[in-house]
Amino acid sequence: MPSRNLEKIYLPDTYYHVYNRGVNKRRIFLDDEDYRVFLNLFKRYLSNEPQFDNKHREYPWLHDDIELLAFCLMPNHFHLLVYQISDKAMTALLRGVCTAYTGYFNKKYARVGHLFQDRFKASMITTDGYLQHISRYIHLNPHEYATWSYSSYAYYTQNKSAEWLQPGKIIELFPSTSAYAEFVADYKDFKDSLDDITSELANS
Image 1 (spheres, rainbow, N blue to C red):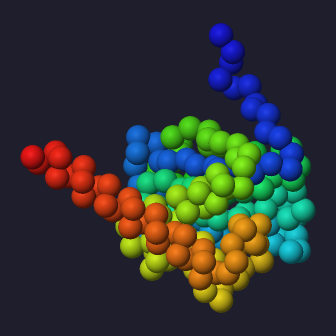
Image 2 (cartoon, helix red, strand yellow; image 1 turned 45 degrees about the vertical axis):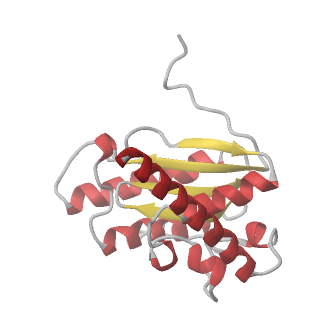
């Protein structure tokens, strides 16, 4: 049987949907500061210029090795859409972010041990249609997705930007940002109608 500790190989110049959840499905974000700290870790590794710790040691700089295209943080899990340029960049980014965040979380809440359920999961995306849908799926995780503070939806539909987030590869697949917003809303309405039908059938 193959060892679970064998490092998985991810391809360069490839899109991936990345996700993970809290161990035993526990919450990994308990307040606004937790969400902000997690997002700030992307700035650490993906900024336009290298970042340094308080002893002026340089953090791994992955700006030219991987692009974060979309994200959504939920109370007990997260979703990312990335474009990996170098073959080990995704592993380096997730290891750095999750290790640092676990250290912060355990210190803040006086706990020990793993915070995340397992090593992150990553699904390869090979078509533009799938790429569009995954971005929509990620943004629709919160019920009130349009006003959820901890996703990249506002970076797609409003005049908002961050140097560590690069949504251009998705946005350019649509004629306008409003077209993207309609694309997301149409599926939300469709999903809601399916939920209503399922509920009615269950109660009939």
